[in-house]
Amino acid sequence: MDTAVIVVGAGPAGLMLAGELRLAGVEVTVLERLPESTGESRGLGFTTRTMEVFDQRGLLPRFGGLETSAQGHFGGIPLDLSVLDGAHLPNKTIPQSRTEGVLEEWAAQLGADIRRGHEVLSLSQGPDHVEVEVRGPAGTQRLRGAYLVGCDGGRSTIRNRAGFDFPGTAATLEMYLADVRGLDLRQRMIGETLPGGMVMVGHLDGGITRLIVCEGGTPPKKRTAPVPYADVAAAWQRLTGEDISHGEPVWISSFGDATRQVTEYRKGRVLLAGDSAHIHLPAGGQGMNTSLQDSVNLGWKLAAVVRGTAPQSLLDTYHSERHPVGARLMMNTRAQGLLFLSGSEMQPLRDVLRELTAYPDVTLHLARMVSGLEIRYDVGEGDHPLLGRRLPHVELVGGDTKTSTTQLLHPARGVLLDLADNAALRETAGPWADRVDVVTATPHESGPLADTTGVLVRPDGHVAWTASGPQDLGAALERWFGPA
Image (cartoon, rainbow, N blue to C red; front, side, top):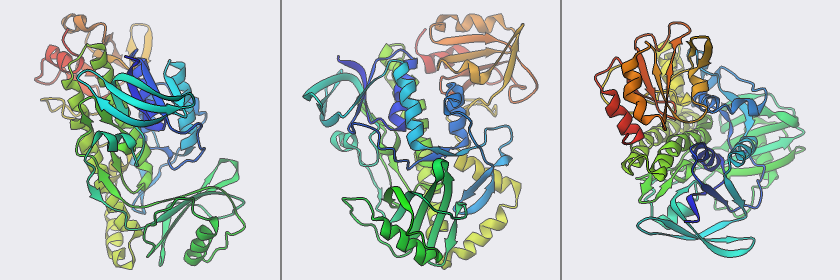
């Protein structure tokens, strides 16, 4: 083998996956078609769940001071995200280019082999390997790995070459996305519905204004070049009456509302993550964030299989856990598109939904949906509220040592929290010491861990077992971490 895992695509999903694999000590080679980053940033900011994910890997400080906001929306209906008590608030200002830069530096420091200017031309699978033909600066070569993960975006070469089924609906409209200098526009962070369409305005660093323009009755076009700025300015003036023709575009793109999801996230030794597996209207910036979380779910599982500590069946849980998340993402972004981008016929529904968000339970439900906090995986029997969910940040005290659930997850290993100084619990986990860290501690104060004396946490932060449930600890350890 030339490498253990080949990752195709050096976007957020691919770079996050490379870092996760290297944390587990697995060799990874990232192939990126572009010779250098474009600097374009379709994605902007992090949802609450992604803030948690970055925090559990110790990555948040790499972004510097992060501005957060409790202002959110569902299809243009304002949501107060402060109802997510105790959770990180989202960030809405970090451009995708900066996210990619941080993740690339992190993955490279961990030892990932990142090769830019390398385009995959073809692939084939054998019984124990995947082989790709790659065109790079030194010519065409072949590269062989045990597994390959396509993280190469909505027009994924890997998805097409490997024959994944990608059903869904085609785009019905075209929207413009532009970063522009020299504009003085009032901020419209959650967007504004107008008689002829919708506009959105965000203020970024460096005097740049982020614009999104959707004019009604604009069918999607097959473009081979960027949208002329004159077209963006003309659509903006028709919708708002404001003249922005004097602006200096940094970059311009267009996108539609196509909604598609692969029927399976794995075919043999080829897997898909991020936009390669699902595309949708970018409502609320959920796309990049879901892609990052795909990689965090997959990374530790793929690493365990490559190392031989877990059977290939562990990889089946990647599809069973993340495909429903992607399907729900398709549902909520389509709903938001109907609310936000339809005409006046949708106004009564907008008004009703606005009334409903006055009820705390409705706001909490929608806030959890768009923030990624509603996700609960099926990890087995039990009714503890944490089971299958991500373990929230909890301060822990063990003797004279203070730590937290977040800090314990930095190495991306399993963690067994012994919250009652239970020698039998520690003895049971002993045979998995090479994969699971056992920590005896008590919560600093009562909170989500108050109703159990032990918790098994997967490397992705999701709770796989609690002492208050009917599951056997040994069985849970074997299911998620392989035989002892």
